[in-house]
Length: 321
Figure (cartoon, rainbow, N blue to C red):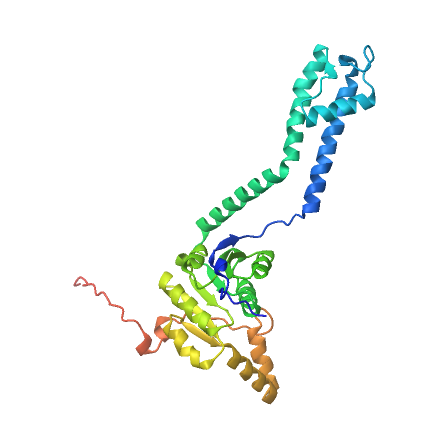
């Protein structure tokens, strides 16, 4: 199933959201971690109180040191509430321990209890910082619009050709496609690829390549028009399904157009008629394995005369002997 890269019916899809790879934490694991930490703090407080039990007074048992149960009870009500006053520290050492140890533990305990809200705020702050840092470093990157079968193949080939994941940005409306791109270590923008705001979130103004890999030709045309308006210098490569739309896509700003359905049909025919030739072509398309095509700049002296740039030759006067 191909990703569309544009929202056809959902108006909310036009809102762009940048997402990056993060370490997944399940709610059960997060709650369990907080519970274990709370129990640990409670146990530590109970041990501290029990070790100094002679410095506390229990109104229920006056004149007797605190029992283990009373120590756990005092630690529980002290950490969770302000205390009921039935057990109080009476010696200076017990009051000092409450001030130096029990009170900080109580603050940490309360932080653990409201840890969900704090974790959300911390996660948002950390994500905003990572996105801002990513934006400051983006220059000359490639934007792949549509993360379906073609888009995944594009990203994989770019990566195999030496382009790092940090230089590849995915744009797609589907949440599962965005999550899959993040899982692959790619930055993804969730939103409609035909919207200027969405492409701006992908920093298209500083991109060097834009690859349009959506499954609808009309969507590809709109994306090419918008991308060309936002970046007049970027190379735009687009896939098209119908041959009759190839010229239209070029007129919309695409530098190169790949006829995906026709190319697949030609490969099927070549592999049927000339299997060896088909294997060679397939090998060339599979980068990093077998045969690879490399592109090198041609020296000026070997270019045809009609393709050479006219370079002015500066003549310097030589001194006469």
